[in-house]
Image 1 (cartoon, helix red, strand yellow):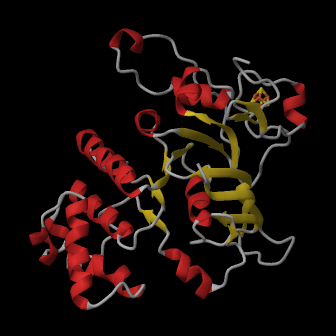
Image 2 (cartoon, rainbow, N blue to C red; image 1 turned 120 degrees about the horizontal axis):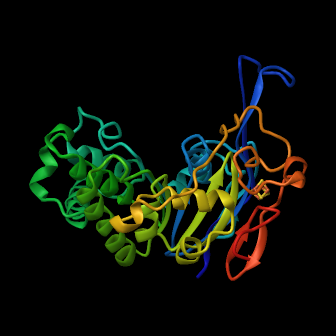
Length: 324
Ligand code: SF4
């Protein structure tokens, strides 16, 4: 399938501690050289612990935040240098569903206005056309038309997230970033919203960039996975391959920390991560995972491994990949 979004050596560095000039304050390397292609109609999950830079990466891919360096292309067009007007035209195609359905909907607006707002912004059509589209959007996410007159507080968490999805889909996007979009929901509601996202993907030919810390969601929902650690992608591959045999020690430890459905396996001894997570302001030399890695050797403390292509769609940034 065609590449929808491609990121080349993307970085987002910013200064904290008051300094604005070079040499003042400390630099946080939130995203530190990410190269990645996302293909049409796939679900690419980006996983990692909080603070690893995954939300920042999702936002700079949509240019909701500006990168400090590198390039983002949408269907072959470099969008990094587009001005506001150029981005506005593309905004319809690039959308985001936020984590918190409670915080992301304006409590003083009726659902019809929440859904109509992006349609009006992009000149979707007459008031009547917009009204019809709002009703159609509610249909698409499995909610009744009569809800159009209601306010966000009248809905459950799952219903609000459906409204958030309807709003993101209003202008018929083709690339949607889902930023922890089901994390705040109960497990049963989570499953319903994931089913909805999956049906909408088939129907509307959507491509998802699915940011989450929850590997059990990744396993059931994603086609491919990227694992992020302190601003870097450390492993990329097809979901089933990654779960069957992770190549990076960090991926292995993340997977082994997921509670197992089978109670007989729950008691099994699982390797745990040791050591502190280094600060993104003060990264260690060499592999940035070496302070926590059970397999670290001398070279790991001095040489930072690049993301290497391992064939069959897999890549890993480790001097001593596992299972290979
Ligand atoms: Fe561990 Fe070394 Fe691989 Fe880093 S490069 S993950 S420290 S084995």
